[in-house]
Image 1 (cartoon, rainbow, N blue to C red):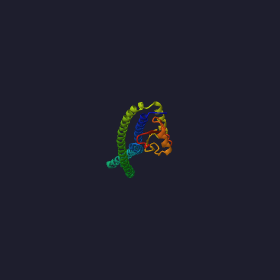
Image 2 (cartoon, rainbow, N blue to C red):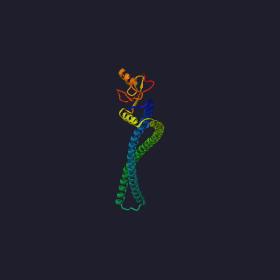
Image 3 (spheres, helix red, strand yellow):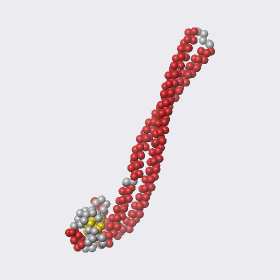
Length: 247
């Protein structure tokens, strides 16, 4: 395959633009916000699970608290009723009076036990509500960080898209200057050689593999026709002669 020297130099222009596009794509894939967002998403999911568990615990304790309050109030109501009956003087039988007094004492002990249980549930409920408030605050803080990082990510991606758009416009100007068969060869070599299909010969060194050419290769290149399409013997990339080739 042959190509005019100007066309070969144009191929280097195309390679430079493709390198810029690859760099922009690498920038998109390696934005620091992406790793930070992934970490925070794991954290927020874990915190959300803990919030649900804490909400369930608070709900259970609130029901237990309501039951404890009801139990205490029932015993108090019964004790008040018995005390009112005792104070009324309507009981004439000594035995009935003795039974009533024993019941009042029993209710007092029962009330004390229930109030102790109520106090224990109340303390647990306060601790559970405090833990829930702390978890909710943590969840909200992580969610706010996620929103901030997502906004930074979107802005960075928009900048990358804008840069890529400008490069693609420049590329669209260069491509028509290069024959289709040369573009096809260049694209194949780019795919096989880490995105670099054409490299300049600079100071007797291939800029693709960074290897210095042997004297034999240099003689071959000096003797080649100006429109001959050369390949590096080491990396097989298209080798383009320039005024800085050192020939």
